[in-house]
Image (tube, rainbow, N blue to C red; front, side, top):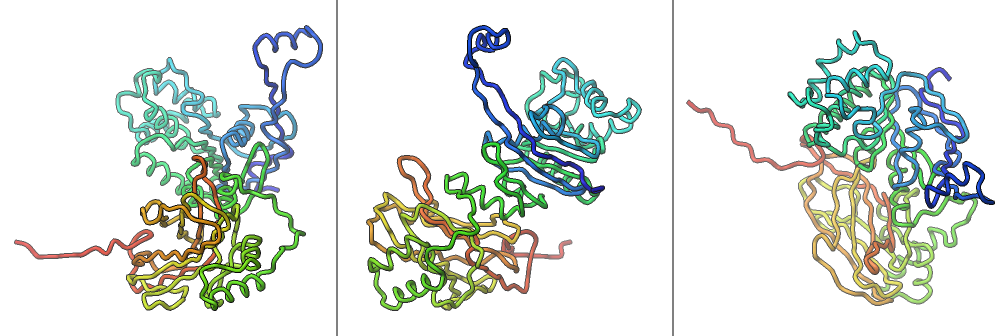
Length: 451
């Protein structure tokens, strides 16, 4: 297709790992029998299509293959198998100062990098002022780059990469260094690039930036592509991977307990008003998880993401306004409560109850938990049921948000997820006055005429 900027087809990258340098020599000269190496597959059959004008994020844990795939796309590495086709001139920030000569000064490195990308000396002359203005490192540009701080290094490297008018920009964690003003300038340039229809491939552990800027996200893990889709969907799956709770989808697998049966069980518990559930209801909650909103008075997300060890289970959840009415619409400036009921399946040293509010793109706007608030740091026993209420004033701007709930904890210093419900409920904020950004600071304004 004419609009494809990058096409990655069945790409694999295999490394031979040797315990000691002598093993590499023995194998090279055929000394001794057998192999002297082990094989590490950094990438396993990766397929990826990036279209012109897209901003695509690549996320994953350390060692998942993110940097490797970028180096193959840019030609720094060759794939062991498969092919990569690139349509357009690439500018890449794979590592701080990659391609810089430490003995050269900043000016010399600008020309060196520009020439490597394919620009003539005259073209670099025309762009030099904009590069120096963006880097803003003063007279240091005439000093050898080996004398630069890491912040100065990245400022110059990014200035070169982003001001030479590439058709494809590839960035690998390069914005993690530099002060807040420089980062803001870089992200503003990102927005300019997107408006100009440039193609951007962005690798970062900053999930908020990935959510904000990326049209699509690819999730890698241990050299395998787990999936690709919206930023919100992939970030939620990535969080499962981080806590070891990811299970590959099995579309044909039937749920063991249907939603209607579970809601009935939860409604029966609430009607009885008992703090302790019967053994049958107990088992159902542990098997499936969430019981849904109380009495079905507010709609839950039919495609919510749910996982956890189920040592504790959220069996009930709802949003209440300042009058105690269950609702999904809250008036800006009023008090509201996020309520959940949690059933303990096993003894837990100190469960942490939490909520998070995200926007529709998946960016986490706000949230808290009982550990942050120092509200509950006690051991619990199997069979106990806890009602958890978070009450606060609604200061978010008017619009639609998504509510996520969770019960987590630490077991021998390891963070453990007992039950998480991502994007379980819609939260609509009703407002007749919106300000800039995500929330209202409720400023008191005083204007006076002076002499």
